[in-house]
Length: 173
Image (cartoon, rainbow, N blue to C red; front, side, top):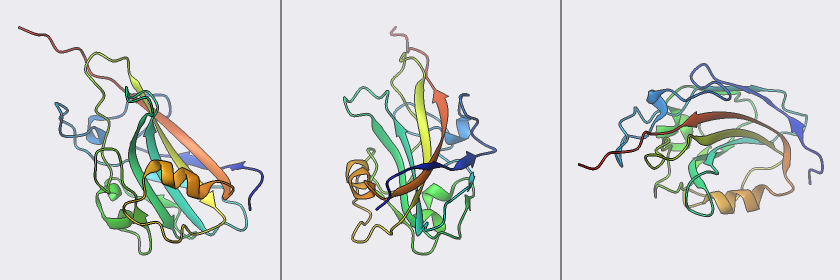
């Protein structure tokens, strides 16, 4: 079992750390009108012993008391170090052997940012994990909570980029 966590370098041409995410990434329901496309991602620095990668996108600012999961994909083979933009719409992000988990929108694929109107910009943490295991028995019904439970003690390295997104208040007429 892993005991220390190293850092992965994570980057995206679509999403810049600490900046507003592009409309292409924003959800396309609940009053949001984005492209609902997962960001392209590249990562490096995985330590020896990496058996799989996993990716999550999580909003800790959602008014739910537990945040909101937007993307979970796991069992990405250790020789894969990038995803194309929009990969989150495909089974397992289009990677043989990988699996999408069940996000808080109620489906097993990427769902973009769509915070309540008038909230300050929310933080969308996209994290890539290098794991010393495959998540055996986890399928498309695996929630963010179950994913976090299953990776406990198995994270060799991780890296995060954080995007921001907010919507203006709606006016009532």
